[in-house]
Length: 315
Length: 289
Image (cartoon, rainbow over all chains, first blue to last red; front, side, top):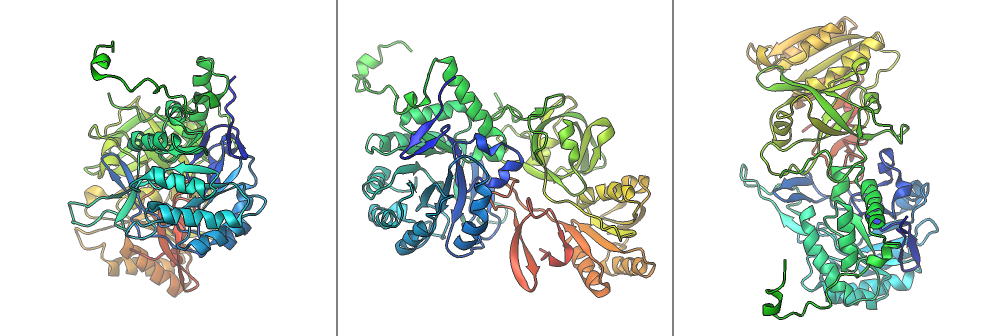
C-alpha cells in the first residue's frame, strides 16, 4: 500500500487531497468522513462580520460556474470562539484562510489566528470578488512581498499564500511570497469572469464579476504550477479543475505537493473520498511506494528537441 | 461521448442494495433508479425513484440536490435543489414533482424507467408540527404545492387536520389535490381563470377558517403575495407560520454561501442559507421578494 503522506513545510498531511477554501466547511461531515482528508480548509475569515455580495451569487456558463460570494462571515472573534472548535473535532490539520484590505490588518489577523487549534494560516491575498474591480494584493509583486513580510513577522504558524491566476506574471509574485517568508504557495484562486444575460442585458451575478470554477481551469493552472515550481523551493498546493485521481497525479508531476478541490465536491459531495481512494489504487497499480515520488517528476528534460527530429518520431 | 453524471468524480454514491458504510450520517449521495417519469398535466411531471433506504429518512419540506442529466448535450454544471414530493417507505421510493422549465428540469424530463439518477440529501430543515396544533392551513401556488404536499402526510401521522388552499392559473394545472384529499385534507381550489385566486378572496377564506378555529398554524410556498397575505393575517391573529424558500444553490451543505436570503429578526435584517437554516423558515421573519 502506497504511502500517501506529504510534507508541506513543517506540516504533514496524511494524503495530498484537501478541499479548497470557500468550497468546504465542517458541515460536510454530514456526508463524508472528514478524517479522511489531507487537511481541513476553512472559508476565508475577515476581521468584521460581512454580509457578502448581492445575489445571485452563482451562474452557470458553457464551461463551468462563475460565483461571487464576497467573503461573508461572522468575523474573527466569532470564528475563533465558535468555528475553530467545530474543526478541532477532527484529526486533519486545520488551514484557516484569512483576508483583509490592509497589510497592517492582515498582519494583526495572522497574530490573532495563532491559536493552538489553527495549524496553518492561508493568506488569501487573491480573492477576485472582494470588490467590483477585482483588485487584490496578489496582482502585484510589491504588495505581495509587503503583506507576507508583515504577516510573517506576527506569526510562527506555517503561512501559505494563495496566489491569483489573474496576475500577469505569477512567477514573480510567487518568488516575492517565498522571499517574504511564505512556507507554501497555493496556486491558484479563481479566474475573474463575467456573464451577461441576453434576455435582460444584465450581468448574471449580483456583483457583476465572479470567479470561474471549472474542470476547464486545470490545464491553465497546471501550467502556472509547473512554471512556479521551476523557480521556487517551497511546496505548492495546486488548485484548479481537479476532478479525479489522475488530475492529482498531473499536478504532482508538475511540481505540486498537494491539491485543493472545489468544484468536484460541489458536483459530487463524496468526490474527495473517491479521489483519495483512487489515488492510492493508481499508485499501487504502478508500484509507487510513496506518492512524493511523483512531485516534480514530469519528464521534460529532453524536450529541447529539433522540430525535424521530433516530427520523425513515432506517435 | 457524454459523461455519465452518475459516475464521474465519485464511486461512493449508494445504490439500492449497497452496504452503507456510514449509516449514521445525515446526508448521503445516492444513485436512484427511475421507476417512472410521467406527465401529470401540461406543465408538470412526476419522477419516481427507487432509492437506498438511507434516503428514505427525508421528511416533509426537506430537499435533495439533483444531478440532472443534460437536455442538450452540453454540461449541466450544478445540481438543482428540489423538495421531496412524497416518501414511499413501504416501496423504498422517493418522488419529485417538477415543472419542466430550465435546463435542469428539461434534463430530468428525459429520464426513462431504469435510468440512474444521482441525488444528494436529504438536506436542510423541513416543516415541523407543534403538539398543540389541531388544525393547520396550507396555502400554495404552482410548484410550491409540490413542496407543501408532504405536509399532508406529516399532518395525517400526527392526526392534525389540514385545509389546503390550492392556487393555480386554471383548473388544468391545479397540483396535489388528490394527494391532499387522499390523506384526509379538506381542499379549496382558487383560480386565476375565474378570479377566485385574488388576494381579497383568499383573505376571506382564511378569515373564515380562523373564525372556525381551523387555523392553528399557516404554511406556504411558491407565491410572494400569498406569503405577504399570510404574514399579515398571522400577525393580526397571532398565528405562527412556516414558509419554504428557494434560492440558487451550489454546495447544499452550508459551505459556499450561494443560497442566502434576507430575513428580518428583531428589527434587524440578516442573511440565512436556504440549504442549512432552511429551506423552511419562520414565516414572520421571511422578507419576500
